[in-house]
Length: 167
Length: 455
Image (cartoon, rainbow over all chains, first blue to last red; front, side):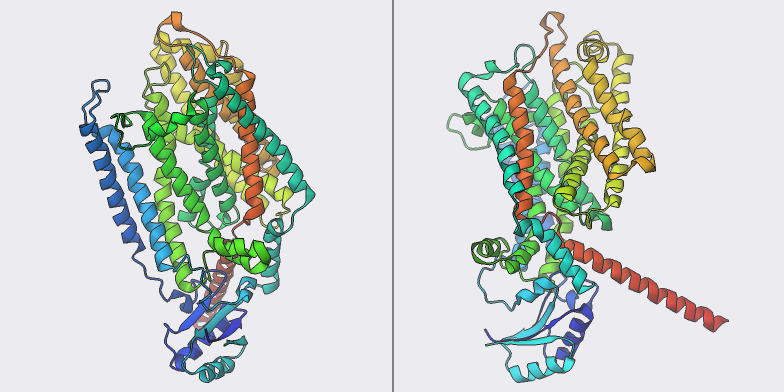
């Protein structure tokens, strides 16, 4: 993988680098930003923040609810057990299991959506990353740039950061 | 955030993970010995049958059930408190959440073991799992024990995920700070996390949704544990107040356990710069609230029973108030109410030491409460000729000691592998504070400029 990137100490300088890249015609999709903490107060961190996760969680909950209802009611009909004069299908007490599996459905759907949309697990070393991020640096760069020299020039011109290249 | 302070923070919190002292091995060996003794005693019980315990007619539920309810109660500390604080975006939660969530996961694991320990034939425990059976013996979904299975497993799964997800960015951090085999392990645990804005946004959304989902699940779990008792026609069990009473008691003991764990971690791992007295004071206030709520529930339960004056219920009532169990009852009242009330309500006494003393009292008091709910009721059923008592044997005591050691051992091993304070959340908190300060300064400057123009 080829890449050109800068390491910045503050979110402000990272924002400046992102703005400079944009001005040079680099699209948001091409720009990679990596940080060791969420920086939700900065504009560059807000890209890709929209998600359907809430609705997928609701869908997961509905699926869990349906499965639980079918599990309890079908089982009780197929293997009828008379318990203390209660009806064969006891919806009141089944509500407990229905509730638990509904919530479990929502939890599983949320975690699955997180894993899929955040691209984890990804154990291949194909992503643009620098261990300096763990020390608090913010990485702003472009992976596999069509014109590496231009990107390098633009990032150098934005100043304040440490410039690095791969490949 | 100042880069030097940020690096210092990371180094401080990662120190216990990256450096190992001889004390660590000593503590692990000590706790491991108790755990091994507990496991060995359980095997002894399985081999010889439940006759070696104090469980006997009419009291078949003794220490094992008490410990089951107690540990499930302790588990309420973590995920529930963490989820509530996350929901309301309480900034002071950040150093506390992981300590709390870990308590939930381990206490649930230990608690869930006790029904198995209490089975004289534990190898048949899988009969509880809903599977298509050729013998047509499916679990009876009307049984509170089947409800337990679903509730505890849902809460355990949710709590483990709630604990694990925010650990991924911290694993990535440890991955970058280690070499060799350890680095490879953390590389696998970090799941290829880099920290793009998309990953952060998704993680925060997921944690928010999980927090919303886990709160009702946490409440349901202890309500359902209370149903194990309140669905039975046993004196002082068949009560509508049991659900909220158990939930309140669980949160109460959970907070106390959290305070004790935090104080130990603060001292042993030298985290004084991150676990401040204010964290203990805030948790102390919560503990005080729960102490009052607990007193309110006990008064309700006792007054209703006394006023009803049902003979079979009064048998249990007097056994606990003035009979065989009275010393335990009044110790419970002292530990849960009389001791914490002055310590936690007087600001000068609400120190770290004060909170720990009150919490130790609460943990003991809440264990006694679980015992007093279970045993006197079973020993005083409506027909007086079936009255009886329960005396624990060494088997139950050793297994109980083993379970306490297991909690300690799991916690020590956890804090060796995982940063016990969520580093990225702490950094985010500092950043948020800076942002709020900057925002306030901008607003003040703007207000001053406007005032100047008006003048």
